[in-house]
Image (cartoon, rainbow, N blue to C red; front, side, top):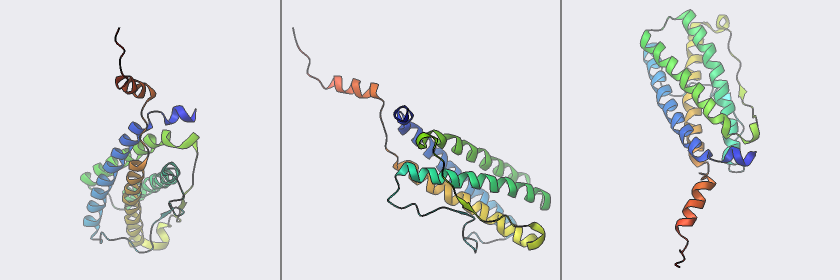
Length: 190
């Protein structure tokens, strides 16, 4: 079963990598809209990332790294849902921003769906997530900084996912391999 799951994964990994690149571009655009609207710096928010993974070193295979990145993106999706609820309740964002945010949500869902079959035997990994702040405790500015971190995390983890997807081995289907082998065999004449 693992062999059949891997069969044709090169094309699927390529499509998923393209989706990850699109997500990175679209989430960068959303981040730009947000920082411009809120007059916040684009540079990384203090306090680091909200979604944290163990080191994804060379000891892990690309598929194992993808498993952790899938977990990070799943948490980013959950955080973005929460950010949308809070943002809509507190700030009533303009239409262009809402449209871009919907695009990012849809693309993130598509990337999660596209990378799911690439995980080995349905393996699941976990990502750590910083606590979601209570809006009352931190005030409006703290909420704005938290949303900034959520958007920065999406840009970061989509970029990492794109890079890892490009390192997955491209496997050709056995039918193509047999056809190519036949082309290079000498033909016998009668």
